[in-house]
Length: 210
Image (cartoon, rainbow, N blue to C red; front, side, top):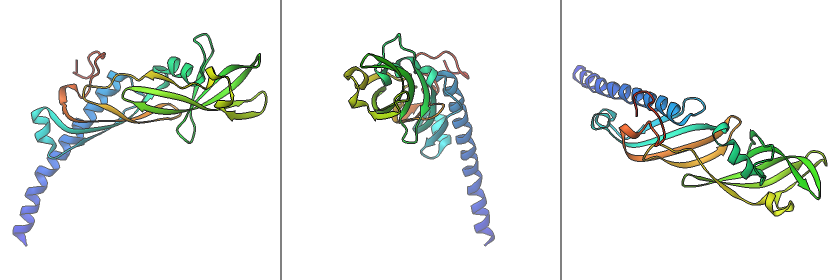
């Protein structure tokens, strides 16, 4: 019994040390990502594989998963225009996301010669680092109507694509939805160089990462 307890205690020490190292690395990568990508809040970072200490010592991570929020200020101009089918001269304001994870934007649309205030609900789809925004429904408050976007002129219902902010080398976007404070994304990568885990190709020095 005593020998068994000592063995368990001896095993727990390296396991605890490994967990501490993993936690420290996750927090440092999260801080660097927040700085480098201009994220809204600190993202959740999860290292995969075991043990973490061996990975950190070698400078390579088996797998990495990130949940983050990209502020609308990073994509508001192009995403807003894409969501509404409007030109650059149109006043567009992204107001967040609905319960279905669709992008919600307020603008004005020309309908049969009338300029009407409108709220556009658009679906989001990922293709690599490009985001396809497709208007799904439009609410015309002045008329008290909410109609499918397909009933509007073709230019207002057309799907459009925009580029998302660059991710650190080796990471790829996996999921995306619209939240109140920005685009909520999940990114993943495998066999990553630790030196690249907290920087983007356009980032300046952030927390010691070039």
